[in-house]
Length: 228
Image (cartoon, rainbow, N blue to C red; front, top):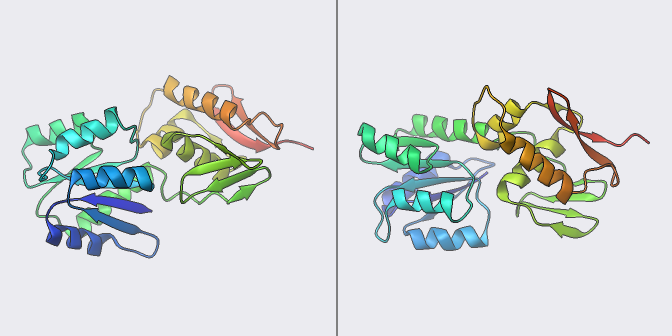
């Protein structure tokens, strides 16, 4: 998992890096919003941690821009020195997935990040790199079909990665919402159906390349191998 941290306090960045660095976790820190924006164009991140007060932007406005204009769909943990209720509400309304007030406590920080990662499916079993005609590039969040790169959004790649990691498993819409979107919902949503339809079309998951993305009436979706 690759975590991007935006905080203009170098000591705070070092603290976050120390708390979160593990064998399978990489942490990249930035002090200015412009630096993070450039980095987002050059490399993939799985989760972002953003401070409110920055030298060249408002963290709150940056979260809003990432969601509305830059298509960032991954988890965002918002941190600030204020824990006022109106600030918490505003951060969540702008697009943050969770909120932590400073001073940060290491155990709580790791627990919150871990919860966000689980909800986003980041700790799901890794998809194999190659299945038949398909090759998954997990580092760059890309999929190739017969050598052709298929352009996918971040959310589409996460959905594909989940399905490829568990071929044959039936996922309800609620399962997919929680694992890919990080949302718990009792009512199904057309958002899942739309993304499934796009993925089926883009990756040609009609059985012609050995895999078929099947709709199971009133239950959900399953990626299955084509019967010989």
